[in-house]
Image 1: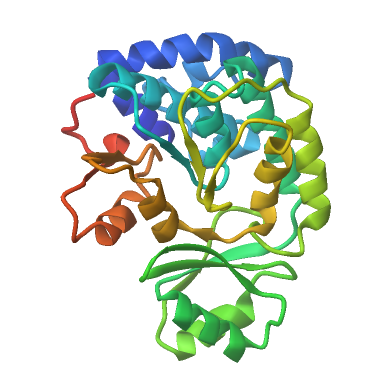
Image 2: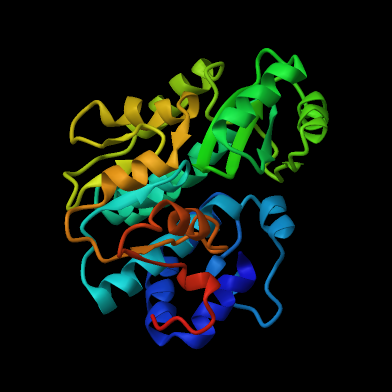
Amino acid sequence: MPAAISAATSRSERFADAFARITEQTDEVSAAEGGARLSRFLTEADPPSVEELQQTGSLELASFVASLAAHQALSGAHGRPAVVLGVSAGDFAAMTAAGVFSLRDGAHLALKAAEVQRSCPGRMVALKCSCEEADEIILRSGVRDASTALVFDDRSVVVTVPGGEGRALREAASAMGVQAVVTPVPFGSHHPSLSRQTVALSAVVASYERHPATMPVHSAAGGRVYRDGDTVPRAMAENLVSRVDFPASLRQSLFPGARVVFDLDTGGALASSARRILSQSTVAVHAPFAEPTFTW
C-alpha cells in the first residue's frame, strides 16, 4: 500500500494535489490520536511497510486517505461517479466521498471503527475456490462456527473462523486441493457472532454528524444503497455480521450505460474479480494504483 501511494504521488500531479489537500486535514486528526502524519510518512523516498503502518495504528487511515485522494483525482479527470461502492471498511471512505461525513469526521470515524474491528475475535482464511466449495470445506473441517465472510468471485472466497487460527479449515482445503491462506488481517469480520461489536460500532457511527449523500452509496456487505436518516449507523455497523457478496453488489450498483469501474484499493485487489464478473459486458475495469501506465 505505501509504495503504491508514493508511486501515485510521483507520477500524477492530479493525485498528488488531491492527496495533499486531504492529508492537510487528516494529519491533524492522526496527530491528535498519536498517529503518524501521512503527508510525509507515505511519500518518503523509502515508504514504510504495511507492518509499520499497522504498528503505528495508521493502516486504516492510510487506506481511507488513499481512496479519497483517488476519488477526488478521478472525479476531476472523468467527472463525478454515478455511484460509489463500499466494500467492507471501504464504506467509511465511500460515505465520506459522498459527503455524508465531513473529511475530518470521516477520518476520526475510520480510526475509531478500526479500534472496534480489531476487537473482533478470530481470523480470516482466503480460499481459491467457489462459494459452494468453501461450504464443503467448512463442512469437512468440522469447524461449526466457521462462516463464509466475503465472496469476491467464483474463484475467491474468504471464511471467518471466530474461534481460532483456522488450521482445521486449511487442512480440509488442502485435502480438496484448494489453496488456503490465513490473511494478514489479525481479526475476524462479517460473521454472525459479532453482535456485541456491531452495537459498539453503531454507537461510534451515531456519534458523528451526518449529511444527505450527494451520490448513491452502495454497500457490498449490506447489499443495498444507504438511505439518509437515523438508520445509517445501524446499517453501517451491521456490515460486521453480514456477508459480502461482491458479484451481486457490483452488478446491482452498475447504472444503465455504465462504461467504467475504478478499483480504488491500493493493491487493485478487486479489479481481477470485477473483470471476471463483467467479462460478458462492455464495462472497462481499471485499478489506478496497480497500473503503472494509468493516466490520472
